[in-house]
Each structure stands twice: as C-alpha cells, then as structure tokens.
Image 1 (tube, rainbow, N blue to C red):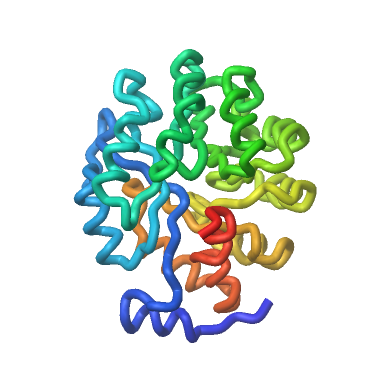
Image 2: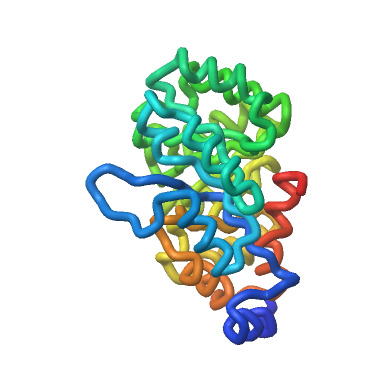
Length: 266
C-alpha cells in the first residue's frame, strides 16, 4: 500500500482542493433532544459545507427518524431550500408501518430530494430483517438505490449477522454500512468480500488508528465511502484523518468522491 503526501499537502495549504470534491454520505440535520448541536438549520449547514469545501451532503433529518408527526417533511424542506449542496435519505421508522408505506409510495414525488433510504434500527429497536422494512428494501432493490444503515458490531438489530441475512436477500440495493459494524472489523471486511453491493462508511471508524489502513489493504478502496454524522462530528477532523492514514492519494480520492459519484450516479 503506497502512501503519498501530495493531496494532504494541498489540503493543508489551501483547506480544500478544487479537483478533489468531498461527498459526505452520512449526515443529519436539526436539533436533537437533550443535547446541544452547533449547527442545526439547513442554512447553518450550508454555510459550513461551503466553508469546508463539501460538494454534497446526503443526510437524514433527526425529525425524519425520531418525530413521526414531522417525518420526512423536514428532509424535503431542507433540500429544497439548499439544493446545491444537500440531498436526503428517506428516513424509515418501522414503528410506524403505515407511514413507511406512505413514504415509499410517494418516494418518486421527491426525486429532487431523495437518493435512497436511511434505517436507524438500533434506536428503533427493530431488526433490519423485519417485514416492516420490506417495502423500502424492495424499492431499493428494484432501483439499485443506496440504503444507509446504522450498524454496530454484534447488534441484534443491525450487526453483522442480520446484515448478512439482508445481503443474501437483496443483491442490487447498495447497502452502506454506517460505522462499519463498529468494532467487528473482521466481520465487516468479510461482508464486503462476500457481497459486491455492500460498502463501508467511515463515520466513527476513525476513532481507532489503523482500521482504515487495514480496510484498504484487505479490500482496496473502491467500496469505502466518506461520512461524518455531521453535525455530530467535524468535517476537518474526518478529512484530516483520511489524509493522515497510510493510504495513497488515489485511495483518498476514491473515498472522498469517486465511490460516492458511482453510488449516486453523479
């Protein structure tokens, strides 16, 4: 694995690199109960993305995941206010199956907003294999859409075992493993080896040194995507963590934008 410092030097010198756009495929929006986030509105997010050089943030509003009375209307409003840098995942909360059916049925109405779906199974306490997700999985499968999963090692809701069950069932949907089954690195690597539609998303992974280098060494960089959980984490930190890893400039470019462009058809 050959490392190069040219891209790192350019980012450190200028803060951004014009021919290396950043695609963040794991973001959020809006306030969250019981804590303070510095950036909660779409206008604040747009200003941050512009400042740090993020070409596109694909997010799911906290309200879409946690406030069924608001739901995906919050996603739609944010993207349509700032369409240059924002796209959204249609949030799926299986605790409200009637709403899930409505969201899937109206998905095409918001082609300018949605790129795919977001599941937060650990928080909703319903495994991703449950039939209440089925309508979303089936649409994602038929269109080869990305589905961003919150995943965590050994979780009964979205850990490596249930992910394998899903990947054996759906072969066209692009299954994005948010947090890479955090801690279960061996299992995450094996999932990517076994299923060509499974991708690793780096949010929270960069808290452990050497994991990204291992992913690239064992898998290559073509199915690793950049994500931050913005506004929970800082773009500069995550960009710097990728640039500071022992991987090549070409690998960094795959992670920062090339892989995302292929997933999104950009």
